[in-house]
Image (cartoon, rainbow, N blue to C red; front, side, top):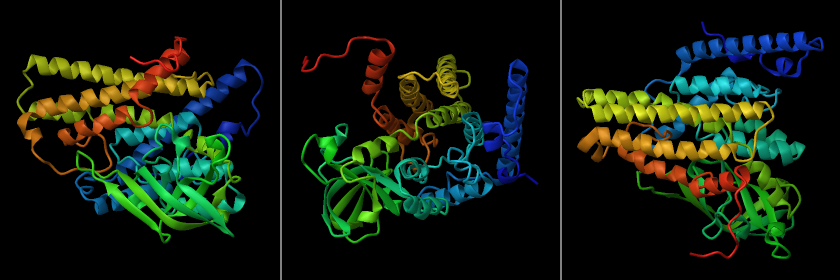
Length: 426
């Protein structure tokens, strides 16, 4: 019978904080390191046993419609919450929270190795919404919303607008205060999975005075409120991951404002800084784990004797391993407190390029058979539908900061190269 994390996760707060005093000097540090290693080994063993008994089987075949995807995502998230593996990055008072970065890494490694579904539907909830509430929300807001996330309440993000993407501070969605409510009118776009969301992290403009950042306010909006209309955006590969949100005189209580009026820009920075790091490592490991899909395709299509295909497959998997090594080093630097500006950009750039080349090889090996329409699997980047995966890979050269932005950060912030002159044109 597998042991659940709630009963066997000694890497939590007592280990991190050192509840038992250790002697000063090299001996004490050595004993602490040994204890931490033993705890991580135990965590890995317990999680593997739990996954062997509980990891969802055939989840790709059961996620080929929007309703199936949403249902399977919620069920898997709630199972991980109950086992203590869903929110290792939350504080220790929450189930399975308070884990060290090293312990979080173990969890993501094992989830990837077991080929479990990525927690896409709850991502904004457990990272963006939780970080915002914990860092900037009031006690009443935290008490109301944080427990609800763990019972399946889903959040989306209402930041970008048709005219405010990379220049987010140019947003125009307007909120006018009337008594105890703000009346909100405007449009948001590229809101991930808003069609499933119960709540929304919403940036609105409450003033046009002064610099544009100074007039932005941060609200928590009920997606079921009158005046909210969600329209999914049908993508080239058949998915509908993003949505437009139309707001027509939507009433949002002043009690659901985060921070002071006009202070929303600073709150948004806490929101956006919450997920980088472990996500990049998880994605890299999942791509490596999907290598067996290409290997199976090579065998099934009788290409095992094709020297060119085998050469290219070996080259791709070597580069995937290099991307995983970059992600590992990035996390090690963060755990050691020596993370440098640009470290995350190296991993993001490597991953986005590798995902495209990886899916392109699958498409090439699949031949004409991969050109025909196949069922779209929601919620994964390596579904085995190579045409859909290849088209979707282009989004990752834009999402989370385009490749061009990442190269600029690496050049200017890591290599010390001069910044591009303002007003320069070809």
